[in-house]
Image (cartoon, rainbow, N blue to C red; front, side, top):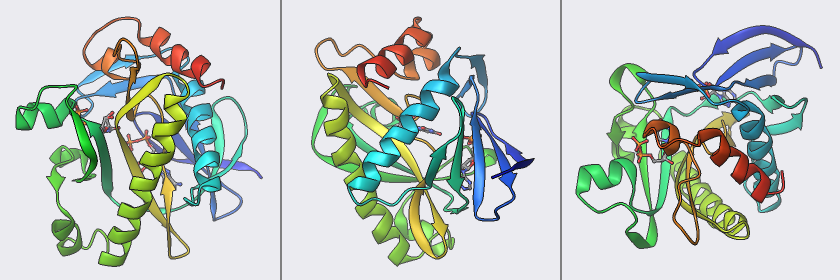
Length: 234
Ligand code: ADP
Ligand code: UDP
């Protein structure tokens, strides 16, 4: 497979065409952004960690019946993926109150839920990824009801699989964001699952092992990413 011209440079990854119209190559950068791009920085080694973690998780999810875009890891930072038509929704699952949930609703960070929640944001940087519901998504023709049903089913399955995966590394999965796409008419999991897109807390101390260390200037950012990488045996 041949890597051709760059199609897109996002905040965390570059995306390249290949000689196969169904295949893209994603290249994970060390660039970090937060608050819709207002805060910028570098997390040394992040690209390698996110690439490897996302690929390992995708392979695990495939085994558990969730189809993903993963094809093949090409290098430390590059992976061949199925080219999808991205559904412009950020799908967020939460097991414990944190972040925007706590801020918006006044529920203290760290409050556990009896059952996970799901929410959707409209993926649109100019609008700041506003929170919407499934009726908005259908009205705006971002997805069909069938697609929303499939996305919900897969998202909760991802949560079940990931909770167990992290727990064996003494990590609590607080919340995460995922994206889906259409590949030859089928909904599959796309984008990445990494400490950039998940909240991960140490089971014993509740120490934050994710991008909140960068967002909130907590220090030891690289150390936290490395800790997750090593605990997961990646
Ligand atoms: P952003 O666009 O938010 O800055 P990234 O830097 O992660 O994010 O860029 C990756 C882009 O590629 C995202 O817009 C994401 O939706 C898109 N993407 C991820 N996986 C795929 C895929 N399999 N096919 C097509 N696009 C993808
Ligand atoms: N998230 C993400 N990308 C976004 C927004 C959120 O990956 O553009 C992740 C974030 O890392 C967290 C979860 O989604 O794991 C829930 O984020 P929240 O809504 O609490 O937003 P934040 O506190 O980041 O504003």
